[in-house]
Amino acid sequence: MNRFPLILPPSSPWLPRRRGFGLAMLSASAVALLGGRDALAAGAAKTTAKQHEADMRILNTALGAEYEAIAAYQVGAESGLLTSGVLALAQQFQGHHKEHAQAIAGAVQKMGGKPVEAKARYSFPTDTLKAEADVLRFAAGLERGAVSAYLGAVPLFADRALAQVAASILGDEAMHWAVLRQALGEAPVPSAFMS
Image (cartoon, rainbow, N blue to C red; front, side, top):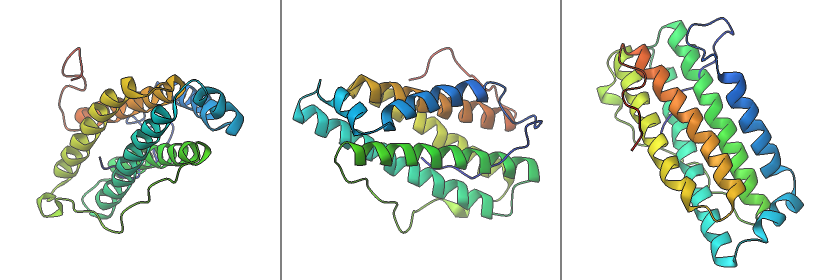
């Protein structure tokens, strides 16, 4: 799952109108999740040691994917193929992935684990990126993969507070995917269900 960094002006047509609500949900969840060892301990106390370890593995897998997304959006941003509006969008989405990574790494640490680190190098299909649409398609594919990954992860968490945060991130990834599809001239929401 790879993402490009984008920062859009508040009046940008690329900026989703529901951004404030989504961030409010994520912020509240992240605050609850990262509010301290006591808050996490309360949730963790309801899980077995085996479930706790499984939750940390899921978080570290998600963290690795978020790092990959950050790197991918950097590739797109540095490609020289993006117009200023799309570049800003990519930077905004990369910023979201950085926030996700920071929250997830903090949760792993507060749970007593060691967060995975970003790879020194990622292998992306840069030879296929010849135009802005190629970069958008690449990013949309990564976002679609992120949606599927979080969709699969949410029900696996033993700690329901972690599942709630993952669901909030899933929603953000789905919005990214929809916006990128729209930028490509495709239906932003191609079906009523994700699989």
